[in-house]
Length: 305
Image 1 (cartoon, rainbow, N blue to C red):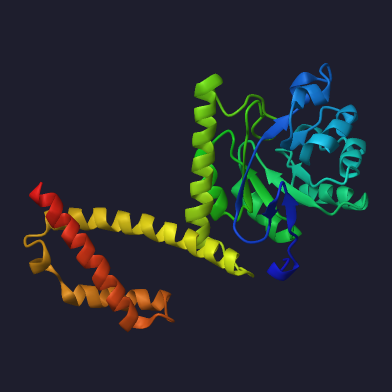
Image 2: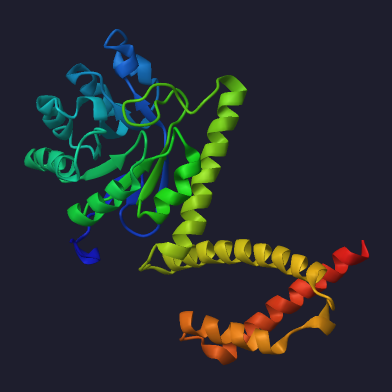
């Protein structure tokens, strides 16, 4: 298994994939639906983040207008096209063919490296197999993306499984591995759906990432950004705790401050201290007392309404 220190980091459109927090990448576009009948520059129109070619004829336009080239799941066996794509010098996003093993998937990245391009990111899409995603990340040392365009509801699970980033199809994009259709809808409705999908992905990388993804910020700005993510997760959990505490107040025979169970609170703090030994029971007791009192005040305010 590749250690964290040996892991690759690839920059795509200014986003560092594989280092620090997980990222959200929008704007995956496939030229396959055009089947080579439309000029690639015309089809793209403007700069895109991830672009999958239909054939080698599309590669010059991709070199000029894309931040990364996608080796789509439907043409991973076209080794000459894989090598030509790697030869562009752009980061290469290698999707997994649904029937491909981890060894085949990782091996395909080797063809790109053989062309002198080691800026390779693996991408799991379609019907996400999160176990395969996790295994490929551990075995290859390369960053791994999860394309959640088809099912944004899997964003949190993908981050929990170790995805270094989430791909959400942009306007006119094609979501999933070799799939067809964008992220749903057209016009204002489609744009609203896309915006909602991006927000869901951003929430996943912020909240789940803060809980499960280790970070080693190297600068003051990176450290503050990491703290902001942890604070966002804390706020979400505190809000949920307050809601549950309100239910407890309605169920207890004696509610409010008079119904506090100090022995239970001490036991709670002791259990928390096993997860946060550096803070210890004394500091955690002060924190939890403030949290409990805030929840009780909120419950009383709601009872008076």
